[in-house]
Every structure is written in structure tokens, then in C-alpha cells.
Length: 136
Picture 1 (cartoon, rainbow, N blue to C red):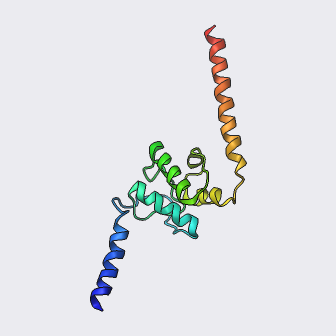
Picture 2: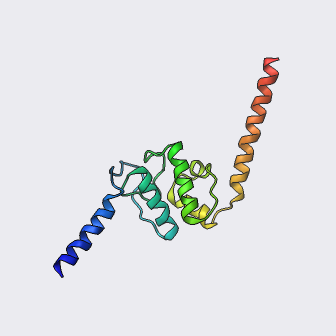
């Protein structure tokens, strides 16, 4: 009976250490644990890809060491695990677990991202147009 308890504790400790290559950096936000299943899944993905054991739902992805390559991996893995479409730009616009969970759960207007993407595209086209005029 004692061996079983030791094995259970060891297994839990090993699972916890899988994600904790690095300690949580000093952030201005206090640690807040996941509140629901979606936040838990996002947290696990971030832990795996960032190598940090303790990530709060209000921690900024980029302050934790995230970058564009990791954001693509995060988006891809979340799409697979949650069976939802997530625009890659969403992690730039909503860089916390809490805000991403709102998008995934449908608690936030998903059309905002289409509009943001459209606005960015429009700005690029206008910039190119101005560049062509100046170069003539």
C-alpha cells in the first residue's frame, strides 16, 4: 500500500516537471489559475511549448518568452485539441489565456478578428499605393 502511494506521488511530480523547464518570470500580473476546461487546455499547451510550469490566465504570452514561431505552434495545437479555427493573429490581439479562452468559447465577437485582418490588409494596400505614387 505504501509503494502505491509513493508511485502515485512520483507520477504526479513527474507530470508536473514535464512542463517546468523554466520558472515563471517576474511579471506585473499575479498568478491566477485556470477557471474552466478551455483555460486549462490553453494553459497546458502554453506550458508544453514555453517550458514554464506555472502560467496564469492573465500572463502575457510574449512576456513569458513567446514569439511568432511558438504562436503558430500554439494556434495549431489548440485547433487540433479543441477542434476550432483560431486565426493566428488572435494571439497577438489577445495574448492572455483568459482572452484566448473567451475567443474560443465564443464569448467574444469573432467578427472583430475579420475586421482587424481586413483593416491591416487595407492599410497595406494603401501603403503600397502611396509608395507607387512616390516612386513615379
